[in-house]
Figure 1 (tube, rainbow, N blue to C red):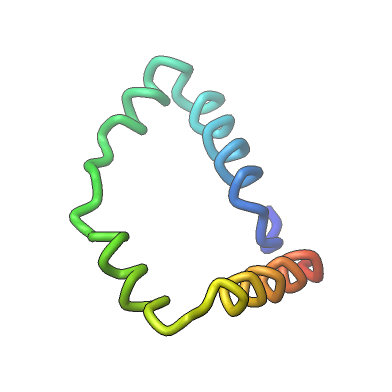
Figure 2: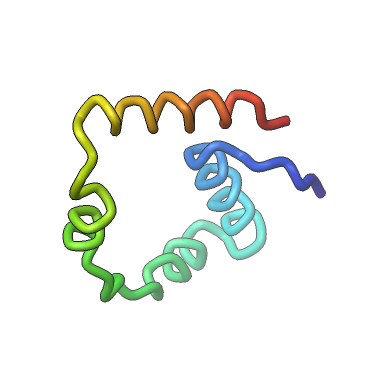
Amino acid sequence: MSDTLLAPAELRSRGFKALVDSLGWVNAVRYIQQFERSELDYTRERDVILKDASPRQMMDRLADLEDKLRKLP
């Protein structure tokens, strides 16, 4: 097992494959369906977190995160 952080899409892909390998396709889907929708309000939280950020600042933050992700092993 590796401690390397995977990109979100790769993590979802490998995670679902592991579920299918372990439970079979039907039960893997049934397992995923058991999770309830979040009670969190993403829009409200986003507005609080980014209320003072300009579009340029948000783009700079995304570029910084992208650079950090590229440097992960």
